[in-house]
Length: 416
Image 1: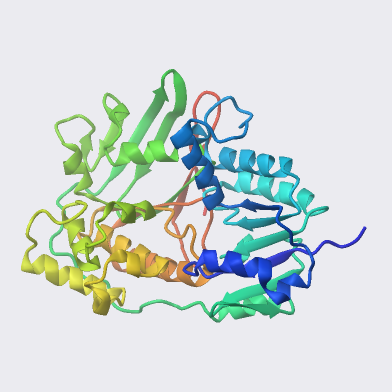
Image 2: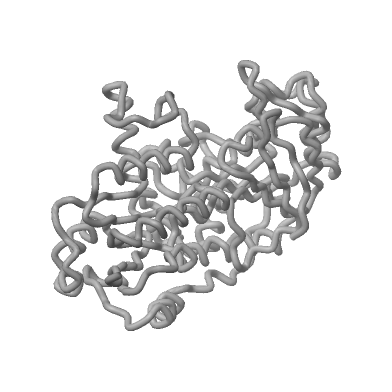
């Protein structure tokens, strides 16, 4: 059987994807492989978003999901599986694959990889990747994107060496000190005792027993749909299912008189999607200041001390000269660092980091990992890190794993 040509293109997270897609079909280095025609299948988060938008606007995606349910109600893994099945039904001449593993649990990643290994037997694949660990094992041609052009690499080792040279160690400055300290019981910081949650008779989590103490560094893992979001919503006080259960947050049982805002004041929360909620006119300095009151925008005049501390954080993440810029003008790594600084500006007892390295390239992920580890080493804040994968350089002291079942997901503490 003739060997298929499969191409990997390393793309920094902040590169213009539209330009890259245009290069793919016309670049002379790639044209030599004679795999291009108009019948391409694009497997990416952007392609999936287009189908979701079509469903939102017109009530259907244009293809059968096979699950007798709308696409938007499925988990990330299920959505990508049905998208891949639809693309295969179109008999494509070749695949362009991007962000193949984003937001997928380890088991689903293995399923998707196995499927593409099968596809690769008969259909050429062009994989755009940001992290070296994403590269399909069957790739046999390697390129990187730099200065609006593609650079060929003689081997995978040559490509990885080039990527490694782009990784920066991050800042070595001292973490800014807090303005005040929180007067709360040290242990347990959070405790769930036999906590169960169901929706419309469908069990989500069952008999969860988890205690988080001050100063610990936890990682929360579990397959897509295993209840991680439910657990987080219980801890942040947003989920009314916590009432009437043995759920203790910062020394108080849920429902004993505290408000949601009392709970949130003690939590710093990071999620990359937060950038979508801020005005394009909000400067990154104002965004960090807003972390003192957990607000989207500034509605209370900040004190001089709050402004000073926000500026110290800007110096810490080396963005002080850009303090008056809107976040949209920063790189993805810089945006993430601003949001983490916003979550940490009040030095909360608990910091929740929800997928902070998702969608980043290796160099950008290294910056975020370094920042998180500095917070671990230089503060007393307890960290709850949510991610499917382990990151080199991060050292969680404990892992809480959710395992789904028909009776609801159960939780287990696993060794690091």
